[in-house]
Length: 304
Image 1 (tube, one colour):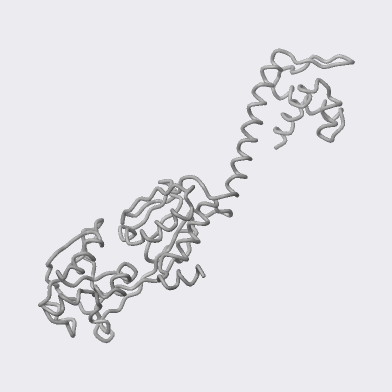
Image 2 (image 1 turned 30 degrees about the horizontal axis):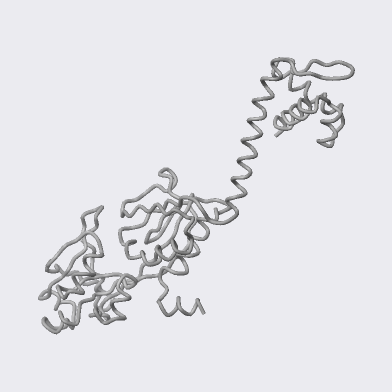
């Protein structure tokens, strides 16, 4: 900052052609301006001004240096303006990583885009572990516990897995009454895209987990096809409640074996630790925390 002060003194003196006028503009004495420029010349090992008793003029080196200093202060001014704008209306690109199940969050994402049209969403849907800082993401949405001191986080909501199927399917095949009954049903299974492992159905009898070798009628690595297959009466699927809320409310899907299904997960938003959030990230975090798991009736209530 001392260097910037000396550069500012030089620019003011060069443009005013006077140490006295430069001092007046900066609120210091002409002697202080002269000493600052003398120290600057000593550090640069070059004379910047020709001095006389009445006036000062730039040396060729001083004129060259003045142009460079003007560019420096122009960049500083531009940086300050840019920062000031970040504290204003949300705008610009927002790069976010979301799990593949994040496709089920599209209603909330679409609502955000309508609410903040000047924010350009760049969304990467993937279940792989991403390094938010090294890969340049503004934020990531992930399920589970988080242990990274470099990151801030906010809970978006709690979700639960449910076993669901269509009323038509259960009318044809019967409704399972206990976990073992699933052995004779069409099971629609989810395989994690990153690990290749099957997602375990969270069945429990009392305090003991129930692990079954489920008959695989279909296996997919994303959630959306499972919802469609279940709605079309092709079998039973294990799906997050927020992803099938509309279908459950409409009655196109119903849950089964609820007393035996025990699961609770947490979605969190994470972003690099920072004292200040940019407006675009701040409104995105707030919006998703408010909207992601809200029901239609809750959202309608907030509008009134």
